[in-house]
Length: 521
Image (cartoon, rainbow, N blue to C red):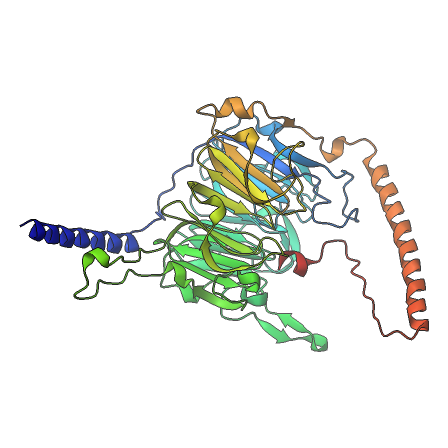
C-alpha cells in the first residue's frame, strides 16, 4: 500500500511539474499595453565629466576648454538634489545622458557636438539641463535611447522624437545629412514602447510588438537581410541608408517586448522571454558560438529551449526535465550582451576586455552568483549592476572613475566589486555610458542618509568659465606647434628608413578620436 501511494504521488508530482514547465514556457513576461511608472529615487553620477575629451586622444578642435576631470566616487548632481527620478536614458557608446523625473520633466547633459541633447544648439552641458522642448504633461517622455551622436525619446502615448547627428539617416526623419539640434517627431511610426541606438543606427518596437530599424546598414545592424552594400563612385563600396523606420520582416510573426543595441549589434526579446540577435558578430557578441555577422534576426537557441516530454516507461524519480530558459531583462554593451532570467540570474556573452577571452554563447555570469540581480548596464568595458541592497561595478583598466570606488580605492577591477559608499541602499536603476555611470537610489530604508553623505557635483557651465576662448586658442596653438614638430621628426625618420633601403611602411592615425573599429568593434 505504501509503495502504491508512493508511485501515485510521484505521478501526480510529475504531472504538476510538467504543467508548470509548460505554463512557464508560454506565460508572457511582459505587458506591452500598460505603463507603470517605476519607483523614484535620487540619481547619482561617477566617471568622466570632461565631455569634449572623453574618448578622444587629448585636446582636439572640439575641445571646449574644460580640462580632464574624472569623478572617482559617486556624486549627487546639484540641479537634481532631492528631485525624484525614475528613469535613466544612456547608451554604451554615448557621452551624454538623460533622466526622467516624477513630475514629467526630462533633463539632459554631456557632449552635444551634434545637437544630441535636443537643446537647440551644439554647446556641451555640464549640469543636468531641462529639455523644455520635450516637456508635455499630457504626454510625457517615458523612455528613450542614446547612440554615439544621436538620441531617441518616446512618450507615454508612443510618439517618437529624435535629435543629433543625421549623417546616416539615424534620426528616421526621411532624409540624411544635416544634424538636427531640436527634437523632431518621427511621424511614420506610432505606439513606440522600447528603443535602442548604436553607432549611427536606431531600433524600436511598438505596442503591437513589431520592430523597426533605420540608419547605417553596415554589417547587417538593421536586420533587413542585407547590409545594403553596393559599388559606388570610384569603385568604392557604399551603403544604402534607411532614412525612415522600416519594419523587420523576419520578426513580424513575433511579439517583441524589449530592444537593446550595442555599438553595432542588437538584441531583442519577445513577451515570453525568447531572444534574437543580429548585426556585427565579432567577439561572439551575438551568442551563436561564432564571429559571423547576421544580416537578419537569428534565434538565440539557448533561450528557445522547450522542456522535453518524459519518455514512455521512464521512472519519474530519475527524469529531470530541462526547464525553459527565458529572459525578463536584456541589455547590450558595446561588444556584449546581458540578460536576467526569471530566477534573477545574470547571463553574459561577448567581450568587455579586448585582451581577454570572448564568451561565444550565453553563460550564467559567475561573478554575480548568489546575488539577486535586478538590472545591469555596460559601456565599452565597464559594467554596473543593481542588486538587492548593493551596487556592484567592475571593469578592466583603463577606467575613468565610472566604477565609483573612490579616491583611496582601486580604480579598476576585473572581478565584481561592491561600491562601499552605497552598501545597504536599495538601488532602483543603473546606467553605464562610454566612460560614466549613473544609479538611482531609493530614499527609503536609510537610503537618503547614505546618499546625503555624498559630495555634490556643481561644475560651471561653459558660459561661466573666465577667458575660455583664450584658453582654447592657446591650447590649440600649442597642439599645432607640437604636431608640426612631430611631423617634421617623422619625416626625418622616414628619410632615414628609405636611405637604408628598408621596405618598412609607416602609417599615421592622426584623427582626433580613438580608432572606431578597435574601440567599438
